Image (cartoon, rainbow, N blue to C red; front, side, top):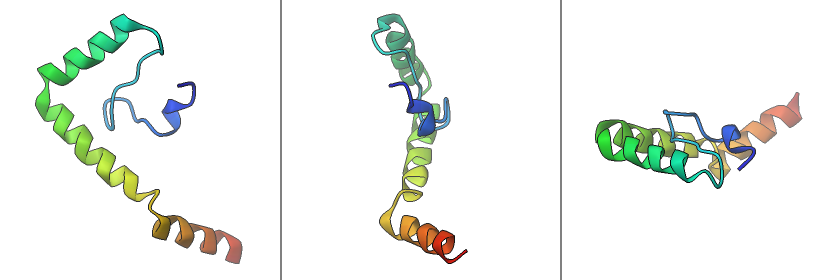
Length: 68
């Protein structure tokens, strides 16, 4: 979607493509199939990035910003 760059780090947490562009989607899928090590690395990076959005971490950030 238009704002996927807000959560997707290209080649680090995944691959982006223009919605409706089948060729780009196929290219992304081929990258995954041809480089499983990179895919596994992106999967691990996704899990790490998801922790940024865990409720405990968000609440801590809110409290720090409110206290300023």
